Image (cartoon, rainbow, N blue to C red; front, side, top):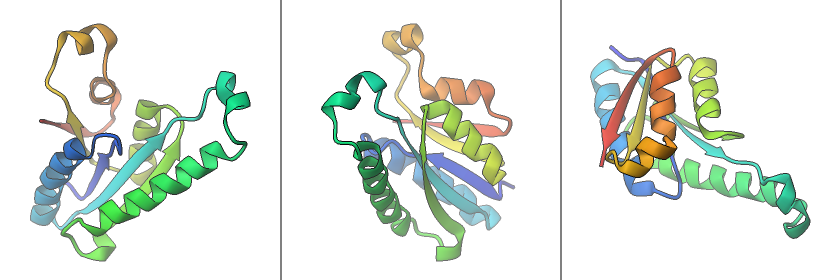
Length: 141
């Protein structure tokens, strides 16, 4: 059914990512589909540039790429059916851009259970669900 499944990964919350990956793997196994893990690194705000090394964003991206490759290697699907990518920018715009660029027909995203703070502040998962051009499965912890 779903052939190209995108799984956003927050490296700060790997437990949530593991649950989303498990759900995505089950769907990919049934359909023979492919999985792409995506992580978005936010750029350092200009106001902090004087206090960080000049190559801070590059170092963060390199670190994230290593973490994502490691995570992708643990996905129990054949090597050719799993990939990972790190994007730079805003979280939900980059997730949506990657879904469109890769041709994802499903996004499997982990999310916390709703709380008052998410109703007031919003969440990236909510925005992905609202604006995605493909189906979205939200996996709760």
